[in-house]
Amino acid sequence: MAKIDIHIDDLVITYNKGKANEFNALQHVEAEIYPREYIILFGPSGCGKSTLLYTILGGNKPESGHMWVKGEDIYAYTPAEMNEYQRNIIGIVYQQFNLIMSLTVLDNVALPRLFLGRPPSERNGRASELLRRFGIPERLENKLPMMMSGGQQQRVSVARALVNDPEILLADEPVGNLDSISSHHVMESFAEVNEVDRKTVILVTHNAAHLPYAHRVFYMRDGVLRRIAVNPAKPQIKRLKPGQTIVTEIEQLTRLWPYLDPIELKVKSIVNFATQDIDFNQIERMELFVLDMLKGSLDEEMFFKKLVTRYADGGLSMNEEGARIMAKRVFTLMKYSHEVQRFRDIIDSDDRFMHQQKYIERILEYLHEEIGVQVTSEQQKLLQLGVGERVGGIITAEEFEEKLVLPFHMGGLAFRETDAHLLSRHLEKLIAQGAYKVQANELAGAHS
Ligand code: ADP
Ligand code: MG
Image 1 (cartoon, protein in one colour):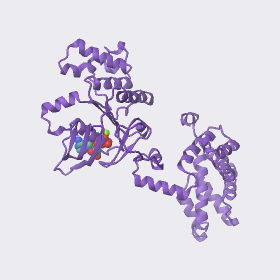
Image 2 (tube, rainbow, N blue to C red):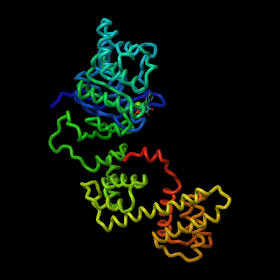
Image 3 (cartoon, rainbow, N blue to C red):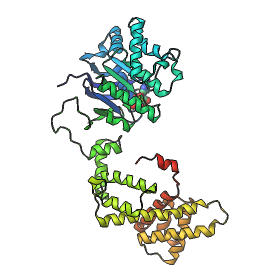
């Protein structure tokens, strides 16, 4: 068994102890981290990620419990020992870079060496070497940090954190302030530090897209470490017995709903099973087909073909009959959603009434066709009015549905509740597709 690097032992961290605003930011956190592991602390804002990270750094004295690092209780250290620990064992990278703005890039990186009393040639040589490794060219070394992009400044911070060759690198939302391209570069630097330099990396993020970098993810919520998930795509450092971890649908749901607890994911799995004929894999894949349809690159026949193609060949493995019905429903919805769009496009024009009537009739045509609810001529007239009000944005979806079920004498349409709900649901789908025009650049930006 690999030796344990860090043992978080029944840790409680309390802020404002004894005051009215006393608050337990960490509650009985228990975990072990192995040398050369890449751990991500994950969870929504305020769940205690930073608190845990700074406790590993030696900055938060536990209310109870212990923080063992390399077999030593770091909160039992003398101030001198703690200093030594923070200087030589741990490196840290912050979201805000925390570079000294009046020092050059090179001096920023070399500074921790200065404190160790190393001669200038030695400390600058090492700093330079690290800067080169993280993609900072020599010509920028003597510039001030301000002259660089955020991504470059963060890579300077990574170099600085490593200059004393620590064993453990901590990072608190290190790409939280960066654009996606710079984020990618910085995240790749951490992966390299872990894989090539063989450092333990403990990184805080609330971005689920980062999770594949980690060996294990610590899911936190409300100061509690709820769950530790092994990343099945990475060879594990913590030894596991064969069969000890099993990849299930729950892991997949974690990607879709990263903040949910296992019990909530189980609920999703069962509700999917009870209400839908397709599973989450199929749903995710179908979303790609729908996106292509919205981009205009799939017509109904092509969409149908995708649905019936075998899953292994990029399709959905649906049967022909089901696929026909599904494709038709989707394309009919899209066709009639244009009537909503046309209606709304002329909302400000003077001669709108004449035209809008036409669009409403088409929308009703859709509703009859799709749902087949029988309506009397009186209901039909009222329905025209109600649909006009709803599509015109004068009443809400709830108000529309309520109107449908109210008796005639109260100004309603006297529909059965189930019919009213079906009608309303279909109308809302049309409105959702028709009322909001997707811009060309949004379509291009959506990933497929
Ligand atoms: P995260 O990093 O997950 O967003 P933090 O660890 O920063 O969460 O904070 C956890 C909780 O502790 C939050 O509710 C936060 O408001 C509170 N907290 C953090 N730091 C302090 C502090 N110094 N004093 C009092 N409360 C704090
Ligand atoms: Mg934080």
